[in-house]
Length: 458
Image (cartoon, rainbow, N blue to C red; front, side, top):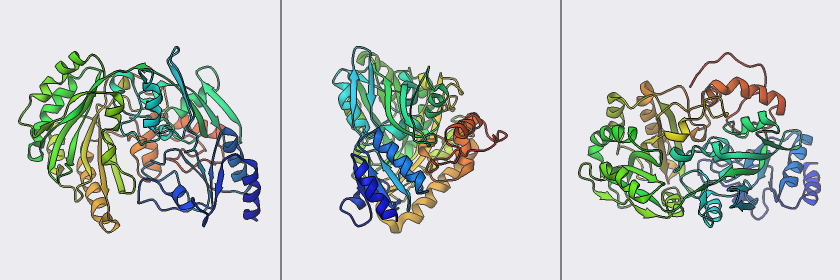
């Protein structure tokens, strides 16, 4: 019976419909994280909003679980479901830049690199992530930290309108004056309230940047972290930085401090001088480069097809004990492809937005801690996952009560609640209004129902 219904669906949409055994099905269900191996009953490669509406109505009629794929980069694999309908937005790559208004309308199948290619033609950019192969949609809906966060905020802070297909099959526009509650919720609430078929962002002038990293022997991690703590505290908004442990392509464990300065290059050179003259680095690759170059700098380290497991949490402060713990685990990952432990410095514009101004609440922390484990052979999964958890457990005493939702594994309700912090109850109310049956639940889920007593803050 479902097969007959699928044939009718196929006739009603512009995009493609794939089922198991058909050419392209296995490619379409494959996401970058090799740990995810799920098989939907149906994959619809949508060509536009009308196709998305048809998918939602079809799934409702046939009581199918729905997952939504933009770029497919959900660490937890939320883009793909078993035995349900995968709404694949990856073919929806329309984009229109308005250089006069400094805005852009973009469809959810775009990657950061594709988006940046269009906006940089006009010397403009929106603050998105740090790996050009990442999809814009999931990144933005979960907050969106990137190289411009200190100067221009998170991706969600620069969204000025969205079009959303809701659980009842309606297409709604949400902005500051229309469906304002939904507009608030999609800026940090993930895919809980519908399928976003179009984003409108503010753009900013972004020319050449100073980007790169300084690398030190991993044995110097403790010293570098103590220096980095003071250096990060003094960073201007234009300089967004990270620090962490990695292995070079030739197999040498190092500890690095990387960053991007978006502003006058002479001022950037002054801001970076303390870092570039500290200690005895093994390499310094900071240089002037285009914004497209800095956005693609990390791409070679995150190729699709590797197994990936991530543990992350905001930390209250970079205390001496926290430094000791981070340094202890630097260079100890069982995989040469892993990054971690790592720190992202959150400051400037990203932290000046009120905790309840958008659904993304975590505006008061200075550092986001993560362990980003990558490996090739599935036989090595257990030891890599165990190491990640051990490192994360060791950092527990220094953690705040919230996590960055874009870095969450499939860890269940308590972590989802913490990710949404003090905004969770308001998100429950939105869920009750826009998705009372929890139709959209392949996400870090906000469940409809009665609002709960706050268990976690920020």
